[in-house]
Length: 495
Image 1 (cartoon, rainbow, N blue to C red):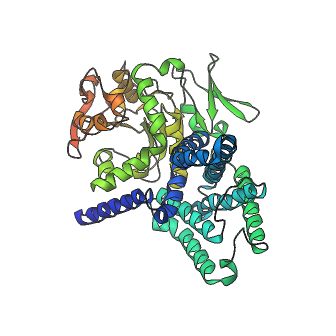
Image 2 (image 1 turned 45 degrees about the vertical axis):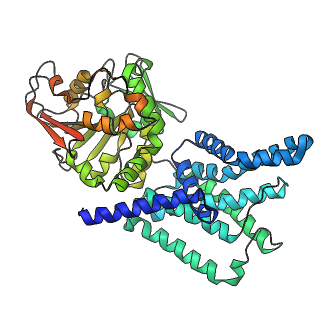
């Protein structure tokens, strides 16, 4: 990407950021930016945690109003006033929670999953209408304009999640634009409001019916996960603790991987879980807590950070992935796969496998794969004990994370073990320069990087002596290192 294009993107990123900041202080702007931030934020969190966080934020922002209202209501009226106001805050968040529960199930459907933009605007009208019907005192402008503004917010976040790719978002944007033109040019529709005695009732009940229909469609839509009992990949799975082969045991609708020794590894949402409590100890536990917390924000903070600093994210990723040797039909494994960003840059026609310690990161990886219309087999596990047979993969690589593994040497030996003889392996991670400049200066992440026993360094000294073509590369202005090495073509004992 040219410097001029990056500068334009950087300018736009700062302008948009300024607009969102302005929305906190200027109500006409916040009327648009608030729903956008709400839809985005709720999509980055588990539903219950997202509701709690947004309720806490709403309560904090409403404190001046609550204090003034309590004094005005007096001692006798204050409890009732506070109860209604707090209930109103909670009810106002229900449309976002509904959107979070229903929308992900509609991703990957027709038109790039554009139907996933509708739960929020439909629920805004329906839930507020029902609340008003039982006299909860929730004031809102429940007009067609409100519907369109909320739909715009959901559509913009949908476009953001699809990285504004024209081929994906164009049909959905066309539908929204056509609906907007019709709504603004048809006198009958312009009068739609829940406050109206006739048209408003029809509008509200239509939104309620639409919300229920989408919820039913989401509930009935089959999940993207194929049964493990029917997967050819099952033959390459092994217990990471005994190396025994695994079989699928089915009880009701639950699948479990079992070994001849009686080990059981549950499968949830198509992802086998190979972790044991002892795997989450030391540095693994410490940094897994970090990734579990930031998983929902991980991709977006990278995108925003790159845009604000004028950094070419594609060039950044390719600066280390370019060392890989990937051919059509290859079985490719990434340990510590995270949200799967690297998968998007690999060639088509390969079989993708990813393992990570964090269930939250893998949940986001699944969502990304649906958006990118890609397939991959994902596993919850410890990169220091891989659940695969020897020589299972044509390509094995790791990006970001090994700097703070509890046992880096063991993790490297595991990567070598599951790679086919002759394979080129890649390990890439941040340098000490980047850790000091970035992570140690960010308020939340600095707690995980302070008081380190040693500086970050490429683990070249931990490679077995038999490895061939060992090369250490400094990439992207020294922020990253890329360590490549080749497993000998002959299988050596102990490797």
